[in-house]
Amino acid sequence: AKWNIDYVHVREWTQKDADFWLSFRIGSSLLNEYNVKPIEYFTLVREQSDKIEKAKFRKPMAYGYFTKDGSVYKIYQPGESNFKFYNVASHLQGYDQLKYDKPYLVICSSLKDAMSLKGMGYNLEVIAPNSENTMIKPYIIDNLKSKYKKIITLFDNDEAGKKAIESYAKAYNIQGCALSICKDISDAIKEHGFEVVHKELKPLLQRTLKQ
Image 1 (cartoon, rainbow, N blue to C red):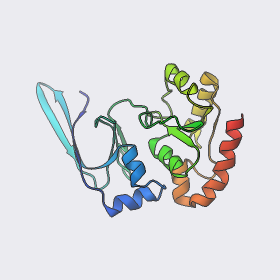
Image 2 (tube, rainbow, N blue to C red):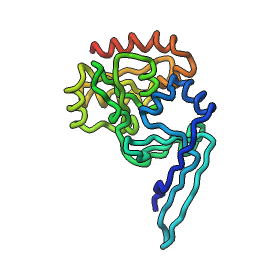
Image 3 (cartoon, rainbow, N blue to C red):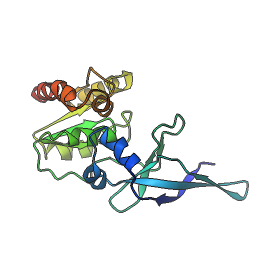
Image 4 (cartoon, rainbow, N blue to C red):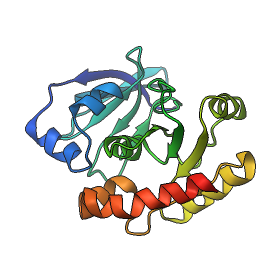
């Protein structure tokens, strides 16, 4: 039987949380906007052999990604080798936060990357599918194309990311790119800093938007 989320207990933010997220250029305003909250613990349940089993998980650093109505759709546990991400429900990350007041939309590989890109202050909006292996549905892409001057992808610099870039180009004629200096944008900012990433990323985005 599959384990399901039973309860998520949210805690207050700490300085350790702030240090972690700020290293990716993600501050409290972005975390609040995208409904990311620190978790003290969460419980899972499953029904098996006519009995209900329950498990409680308490990690020093765990974060819940919530929908605008307060339902958790993903749990992120940085530093964990097993179950770093626990997907609770399918959700197009960042879709609820779109204001359609920018000319460009960038589809990123993760919410963390999307928030990092948003934190760089470019004139664009961001979304992220559940994973790079998850293609956004055609009717959503059609709707988004009517709202923006151009849509591009910015995925990870690895095999999965390159495959996803090709998939969106083939399926939707949406061109894409990836950073060369690091696997993804959030790690690039943490390792190299804003100026170094900005120096590569800005012309990369401009070239991709012109394709």
